Image (cartoon, rainbow, N blue to C red; front, side, top):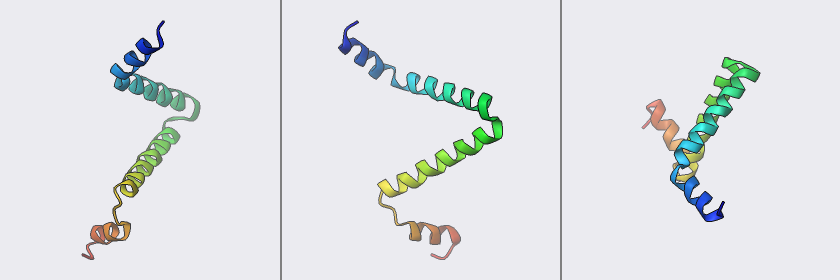
Length: 72
């Protein structure tokens, strides 16, 4: 199989591939560790992603926290 065809196929179906891999990872995690531990890890991943996104967007964390607490 031609390398360029494989790369093109992966590019065209990136969402499906990532979704399948994520589903496989969640399924294996639930089987190995249980639902609650898998849910906890998923929450940590989401919180880490959101914190990293804030850093990438150069958001002032202190200002964000003060706004959430109603100080501003």
